Image (spheres, rainbow, N blue to C red):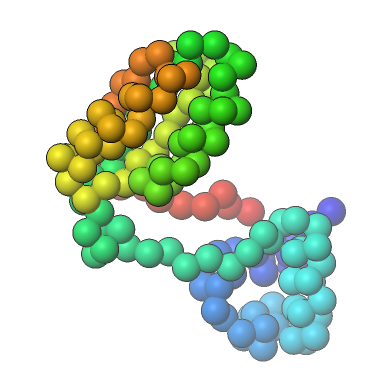
Length: 148
């Protein structure tokens, strides 16, 4: 079970994962050793699953973000389709969903022509995929982690 100190630590690390244990301790009126023990406890319990660097896709030349809804020929085709999608570096997220699509993926490419090539040469030829629908993201006004 997590308490208010654990939540404070996680919020602080979400804001700046490079903040020192001493700084967190100072702001929460406990010792740095306590912070160290708490962070290790949160890691072992699975609340903290890593430290990540967020790259700026636009700066790296990835100007097109889109979402592709995928309909599978059969529900049993999910594992093999997922394996094939996982091999495509342009696919940055995949979700197994209810509703209209079996799989919903997020794709990052550098241009519309790259998107067209990805669809025609890599995604649509996957035998298990019956149909796709592509939605191009115009902007991403909200991007945040789960709050504690």
